Image: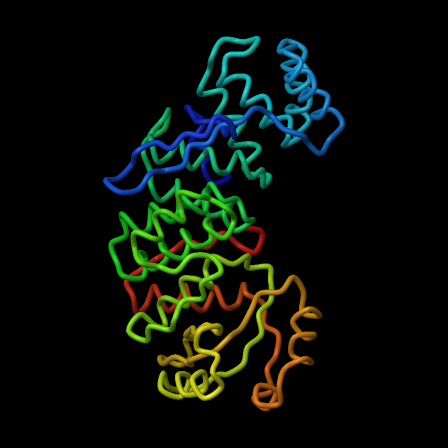
Length: 321
């Protein structure tokens, strides 16, 4: 049974206008952004979008319904919108969420985001914050700023461990980098630097701060590993001597009951792009024999260490986000 298959009871659709923020905590808000169906990949679903925009809701319903039954994720999402809004059909949150769930399982970002909202607010489903975070994470790892922001609020305001709170800050920063204005406001309140303001290395918060930031990066990407050593001190000295403390990130890799301390830099779409950076490096960094590393393996190492040493479990979503 696919994850969330027991959830087809209610939901909240993503409508990107007008913008709304719903209060969740004393100082932060969950993003609940709502939009009508937008341009879609398949011809059939696109015809449904055009009908929706023209106010021909019965025609849109027919098009989306036929496409949804064929397994078209865009059509499933469009059908969910119509059932939620009550366009050409009575409002039916349960049926709406059933189709959002079907689309989300195929990787539809808006559907994933809105399943998260359904779970956090308990709209038609039993309230389940962990399930909400799961669906938000799948959308956020593909760069969806709304989901990045909600994860930031969730972990920063309601995290039980220092690792979860650092992860919240990292997701707020990711939302800020993608233009989410409220994330900038919230980051400023925490004293964190904004996008374009590289954070100074605060060794008291390392390596958890760096690890949290690495968990917000698409696991399908590649990074450049610069160093691997047996102690925290050796990794710190490597970074400080090469003056890369404000740019490189530190993470731990479990090995034989201990950990290796690793230094990485950047995120690139392919190993070839990562290799180009290595070729252009100064001799001081090239001397450490850097190599491309897939971020999915970095992520797996971090999650294992957090579970064992930080009492923090963050479910993985796999390479597909």
